[in-house]
Length: 207
Image 1: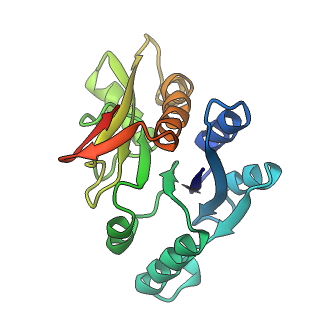
Image 2: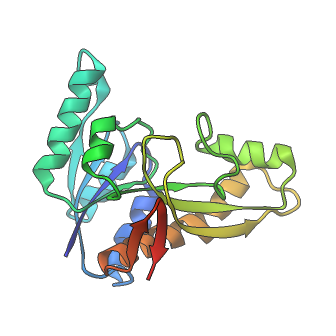
């Protein structure tokens, strides 16, 4: 049984997709142990409570410096004895020592087809604004393993989504969520839970 913690900062729509997939058994062999947020007001925490999942807040605002926050975050995650960390709209940079400790056991969802529109500064609506400004015809989402770079870890899954005439960043963001993000993240967790993924030489291989 894969023990999973989901880390979020906002509304938690990707979290809800995961919860729904576990309940419908599209994700198997998986237990959602906790939802961790840096934001006490995140609606994702309410989603966790409604589903009987432990909700935890570890906020940088509660600590006098980043080192103390990082230490508290690592101690919190360690105490849960989890197998996989899922970043689902988590807007805090993970401590490097945490990435080392959980190497190839942290995945992230990014709302573009990496390596397009990724890296520092590309998050949320900014990704879709940039895609529309560039005039691309196809966008999408990527699930990747997390390393110490920004959106640079091994790519696990990608799914393309068409840009349509009249798209605004908000409309495009919603379509990418519905057609790609909410599909890919549950699929990725299910693959990992059922031992279908291995990372070899910096590449994620589905077997």
